[in-house]
Length: 197
Image 1 (cartoon, rainbow, N blue to C red):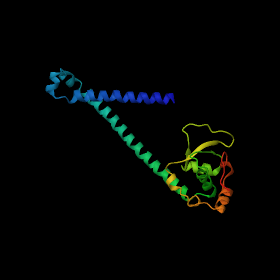
Image 2: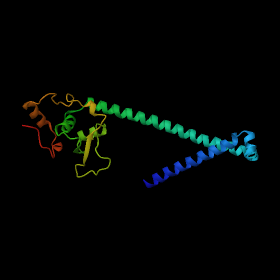
Image 3: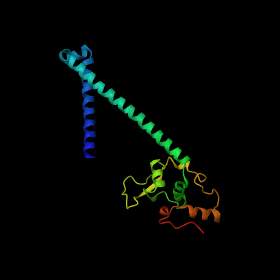
Image 4: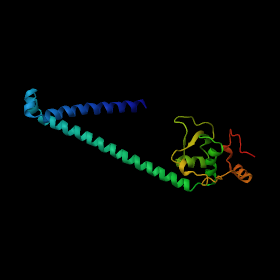
């Protein structure tokens, strides 16, 4: 990490130096003769014209390449984001019984974050599709079950309706409560008070 940061710092310093060289070379090279004589740069302008021209060409090529790379990165990032969202939307359309049960736990337990095992296929599928995301930027994966704190991604939340997850829209009946109880994954029930009834 330190090596990457030092390389990044060196790259920024190099770009800054090259920018100053470009500005200085361009100023001397394209300075009108009258101003060049006034600042005593006429001789330098004449004798160093080939070198200054080369410096301007190289530095401008560098900045053009940098600009093209930034544009390519922006387009690639946008395309990757769209593909990721597409995968997530397709995943939400095709949720299986256990995947829906995992997502229902967030509503049943009224929590933004649940500790779930990564080795469970339903949890892993939701994570890979971007429906679930790590709840913290840095956290340890603990235990044999590889437990980690996960949250529903902001992009997925509008797509996950009560109807889609098999939750009743209005007040739950006893039958609804029993059905939801029996459908709950054992690994998601930890530290939960419980459904009524």
